[in-house]
Image (cartoon, rainbow, N blue to C red):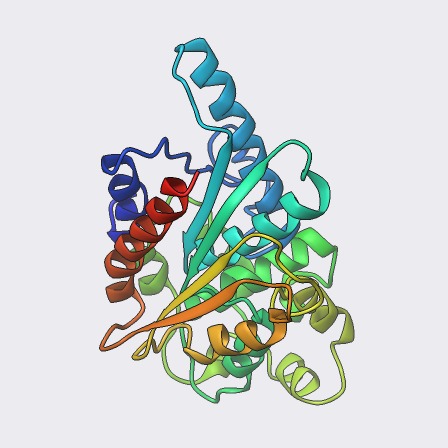
Length: 280
């Protein structure tokens, strides 16, 4: 992880937390299959498997662990952490005691983010949109890639996202400017209208901002200058998940963009987790 994301692991570890960072499906030993980027269920199950593996390793090393766990993530990891919290509470409440969860700068209402990106006449974050389109077609068995992408990218896109290229190399391999340089015009027209319902439903299956209520305390962090994943993503999630029984808050990090929110949100998370652990 030769980027800012490494601080998501280093800072909690340096503060005394046993830190587990899952290698999502599609990487490592499973690299032969598609990476399930921003697909909630397999991302969550990968994290749950990592929790179990961490406990087994701790036992083998005779490393004592407290019973409770904390869940945290930023950006895609924020979406993944929220999906993991939902999965733990719905399916593994008897196995894992979640003390709290902290999520930062994530696209929790992914339908809104992706719709806005594809409604733009110019390409915005094509490395993200092209990857997510590719993932959705593979995971949900949708139309072939030439239905979504214009030549030559319909044939090149799998190679561009083969998980060996760096983010910079992926960006360099994709067009800039008009969105129709990358996306098929007929697909865009249908998506912007009443068509492409299967594609839209596939995206909506990964929305996390409504339809459930967290039981563990949850804190959202977001930079007010985030141009990659706008602050409104956390705001609508706060509104969608709140009720009289939930403990959920939003902290806005002033003057922070997407990457600039990583370190302050992580440090605030550690202090918050410390305060919860000290109550036990």
